[in-house]
Length: 154
Figure 1 (cartoon, rainbow, N blue to C red):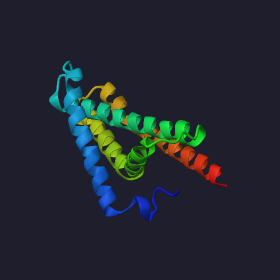
Figure 2 (figure 1 turned 30 degrees about the horizontal axis):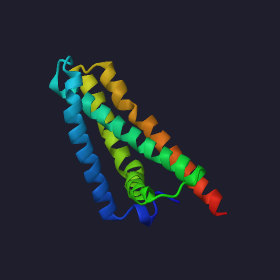
Figure 3 (figure 1 turned 180 degrees about the vertical axis):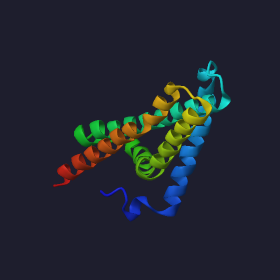
Figure 4 (figure 1 turned 30 degrees about the vertical axis):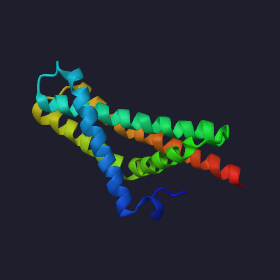
């Protein structure tokens, strides 16, 4: 299924996915900020914590897609759990293909400008730039899951 089809591009879907991502990043970055106490500037602390929160969200989506691939597509386990999984799956698809690329671009630009103007560490830049490869893995898992469902339907 095309992730840019009308099913995944309705404005309400985009608003819900954007609000979900924003809430995740705010809460997780606040919690993870204490891991970066040794970083000298507050801006770099927040950038690093937000990048780590972003990577944790991408990893959670990876796990969600992997659970669907293994237990739903390959093992064909039936359960009431799949109703809730499908809701998370739909929001995750909108996030991976619509919301998270914009957030990843913003984080990478923040780290680049911070490195250039404020002397951010290279660790912050590396952490922020891991977003695109992680999103690529999420997209690959999505297409693998779609392929597994299409193969079973045929």
